[in-house]
Image (cartoon, rainbow, N blue to C red; front, side, top):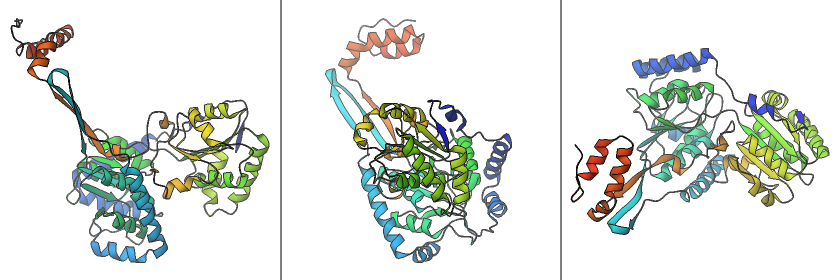
Length: 427
């Protein structure tokens, strides 16, 4: 890990992953092919990229039932409890429709409506992420989305991972297609013979999935353009070095480009964490990936006090932030930019990834400066309600017409003036 003791955070300029032109062209070609050739293109790409000859794209009820039975009972119970925690948390986010009557018979308000359909992308292939099913789909269901579709690439056995299907079964998602990559995003955006298009696409994925989401944005809504995972930890000498090292590695093992950062007021403590990271790396199954992340992206930032630590965090605007100080609640008000904030020594980042309830689909690459985690509000839209009485229009009409005419929009002005008693209509 690289030590930073002079406050220079130039490394932040380098964390955005720029896609090569070749990758962008490849994604554009895949999307065009799926739009033209539908299911045939999806099956051809699944054979090319995943080595799987697909029959039906859609997962059958029987396949789901068999998959659920193969998942250990303890894991099924964990999925069930996590799903309940996630639902309970997100139910508190539900925005409300409202109207109010103001003076002169004017009624104003907003109408909140759920999206009609949503596609949830769940990474797969060599991995299994039932947590991504829960985090992507449960807020949509709470919001009232009627059609929630799940897509995920098949494993080498030709089937979506058992845990993914078990999570889908637990929350009542039954429209599931065994297709991944840019081709799955294209199918969700534009539809094929088997897959009807959706209104919004959410969920994490690799570079090609991210590029595909970027390509289809505008024709369909997306959640974000996610980059590599990040964790920043603010810790003082009261923290446990072994625990902090383990938390840094929990994100480093995601990807070679993941960014683990420790911000500390104690050089001695930072050195202990560095030693622990190197020790624990040797025992980590994903040691090769985590080592690349730690060596290339890992930072140890030394600061004078917790106010400076907060200033550093606000510049990083990390995806995950742990406050492992003697009084984390005293630091919390200083934090303005972070996706998810974990308070205290027992609030390890994986608690949020899997179980606590808040969403783990969180802004990356500094976008926590302006973006929020996925939530119920991500799956609803607001319509404004405006009702003017005759009395209100007579009182305010001339002001409205004057405003419109000042902007050079005579038609707007006349549309109001035609309703005004005694008004002189220009032209």
